[in-house]
Image (cartoon, rainbow, N blue to C red):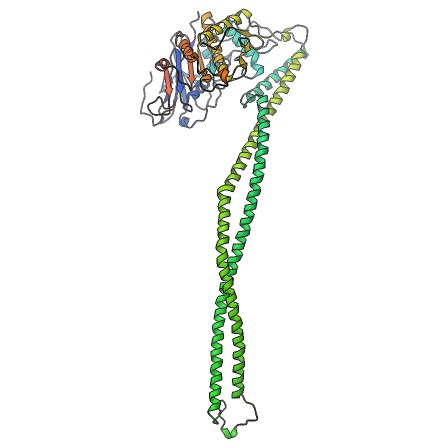
Length: 627
């Protein structure tokens, strides 16, 4: 049996002024469980990143300030290495020994992050050389073309995240149909230890075949590029079409609500504007009345003064006449010189008559003025009564608009905008699927035009031995029985679907909880099969949320909460030999005996209930020693 393989020993993040964030691993079973949003799934993501994943790492707030990642690895033979990489990605540096919190100031070897079969100074070649898989080639298409095995092409069979573990597709497929032949060839290589180096393709092809081959290569590249984009989408086309239909219906309903809300807003705003206009006009008129009353009151005072003056003139004239003859008070003429037949400026009777007439005229005007003043005061009093009521109505409308109508309208507009953005994204996603489908159809058409002469362009699919996959399926059946998987009686591997058939039912037809546990069985049994049969395997597997049926079952048939599968699952893994390493990341609590294991870590939001999260709080100590 092979003695080659790897064990993960620790994952650490360091940064200036930051306490190292680290978690250790050992041989056999390792369990990380606890509350959500505590950084558990981030651990699996970071390990994948340190195995050459492009990233970027999830931008979680706790990660700010950490600039390097350390991954400690040990071979089955006992050699230890620490890989260091910037959190931004790029090349690696490898150091002998395990360094948990302090990176040596010098030494180490730089390793490129991209695989290169002609050079050994890259991460992929370095790791593959430790597990007897260096310089292996695997088939990549039906024509028999081959490609280098890389650590990245192996990683998807070793690290299964919480999204991949419930996917409705074969464990050998990552959604990129163009990569399926290579993924299947890697599966065959792990089961048998035989790669595709002996496969010959393309020799002696005609110019037409070479042109077709070049077109196929281009189409495969385009398909891979689009598949990489499609992989990030929310779901398959059928789900996206359903989502688009729901979005359209929701947007229509929200559009009607928005129209009603906008009409209400316009109506209330119009009423408020009319009231504010009336208030403004009323205040202007009240100001005008106030000014007029001030002026008219002053005028009335003047009228009174004029009447008093004229009355004094009238009374003086009357007294003057009563005094008898005497020198004229105006011209000084003696009585004998008065010319009574002639008028003069000092005609007393005329002055008295004029004064009386003027008094009568002023009194008439004064009466009219008083009536005007009284009317203005009544009008001002009416405005004084009406304006507060209008202002109160305006304030009520403003409060209704600001506190109810406007917030509701903003929320509806924001929701409608978000729905519109989501619909655009879904339409764009469907456009990507349509483009991908067109590329795949063109690729299939080109493959169908291959020369029927029987040369390498017409090679069969990846040759998976029925005997080998039957042995693998038998192991899966035994493991599922050991786990007390519900009513399992038979398992076989479908060469066409490249997936397990359980009790005659496609694995992808089960609910997501059972899909997760059967995906876990596939991954663990692949490791176990390789160890039992002496074929190469990296020696470890990481599974995120395999026991989903205990937390979010998809219906009664998918609900395992009343079974002991979780206990049997962990019991099986706890008994694995030291040359196997399995890391389980779960939100559900494992059995008490598993929680007590030294390689079990609980993450808890409550102080004292477990580890507070992957990233610690507080500043870094002055110095920490490396093991």
